[in-house]
Length: 227
Ligand SMILES: [Zn+2]
Image 1: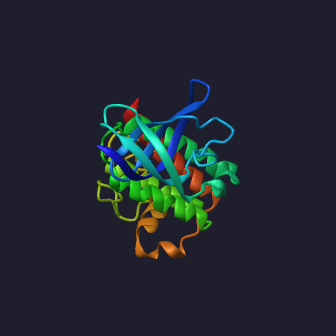
Image 2 (image 1 turned 180 degrees about the vertical axis):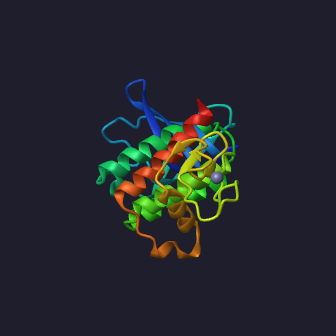
Image 3 (image 1 turned 90 degrees about the horizontal axis):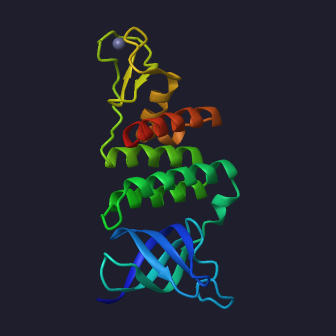
């Protein structure tokens, strides 16, 4: 097929034969694809610094077919991921998210909607809104792979005015303390996620504690369905 230009993000790299890297790249047009960057570990490599975790790049690939590992010819930086490495908590959470992306999105499947949200997340982190950016991405990622979270106003028992402080990891629904379905959670979680998705999200300020409560709920929900 010849030389093709991809837009993508480096998700993972592993050393191959002392001088090369095998890469797992999340591309906009073809989802996750494996690439080989020959000579990337040599001192005068043309890829120097470009193949780091979460760098956003144009990748020029000698593309034969999507079943094999194709050869990376050249790269052109769009956005360097240095701004992520400076925040250890955010770096750690992104590592966790990427680990699960690689387990849930199969190589060769197109996931352009998830890709677009991923880029949006990186932009939000760069604009110093990492908590909102990560939770927003995580919510849509779960939704796009088929595990929606039901953001209802009231518990399904129709008992009005009850706080929704239980979450059932099996069906993704919130429940009140009369119904007690699932695990007890911080009752602000549903309010935070709802506001995050609403036009009023700009007014939302999320504390670190609230971020972790929401993040852990989303992660536990994901793990419940993939393990
Ligand atoms: Zn109820």
